[in-house]
Image (cartoon, rainbow, N blue to C red; front, side, top):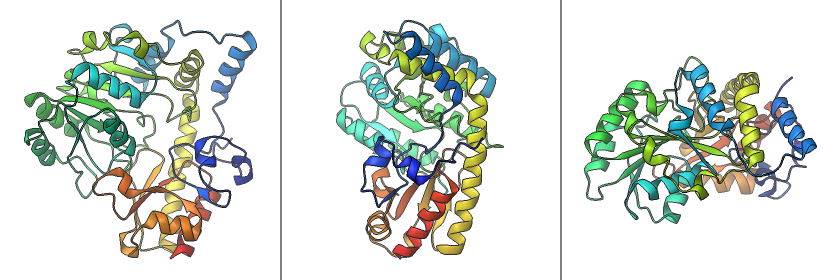
Length: 375
């Protein structure tokens, strides 16, 4: 069965943020929330919880164990679930807590724009200045820019990376990450790698977990099953510490490590353990949607180019050749289609929008037609 075969009418009955933020005549193709049918294995796990009244406090290590098993089977990454993994309420709150635990209050953090807007939002909320080390024009890590950021006047304490990268869909190679780890270790910078999109990579590209690269043992991975299995409303996340920091990571306070709900933990565990074939189908349909989008742009908006990275279900659209002051606003006001505005992703986002491809071919087709009608 197809995953993205829901009609727009069915989707408009949803009460989550994606479908309720904008008026009913706007087609929402923005936030990273998929328009999909849930994995049946996750549905059964949740139905069993409710039928049994098993909705109390979390009390097992099932989620770390499930992730460790998934990591071994999927990426050949062996993790000691008891020694290296702690729970988090969600990825972004966890990142802030890790920064507070490992670095001095107010110390700067490096990011690689254009990058996930919540990095900026949460770091500002946490009182952490950002130091930008821009990606290359091709959307890859620029190690020279990173070294300038590490050695500049701000002297950052940490570097928050997106692996794979949102919004470009770029998958860093193991060699790129090892070179970055060498830089970070030489300059005493803690690397925190957000790997929430890691299950969403099309072959032949392959995810290189931060802790598997030489020098990565001084860093921390944060992740969750929420993005890949569309479980954002069932919050639960994990932090995995490298050999040099795992003991300190386990000292995070209980209000952090015990912050996820039992229902969320059960859902995420079922996803990682029993719903792996569902993700395979998701990636087949996302790849088909990428091909469709590229074809539609060629036919209807040849001035717009797509950064077709092999990861995520997000499309990074370069609209600069359209000559619009604000592509996001033009598409919204004239075409009644909502994307994420490029400037929210930091320096380098001007003239871009981000489109969500985790939806049906019909909605992607309608979205491009609305874009074309706008200009």
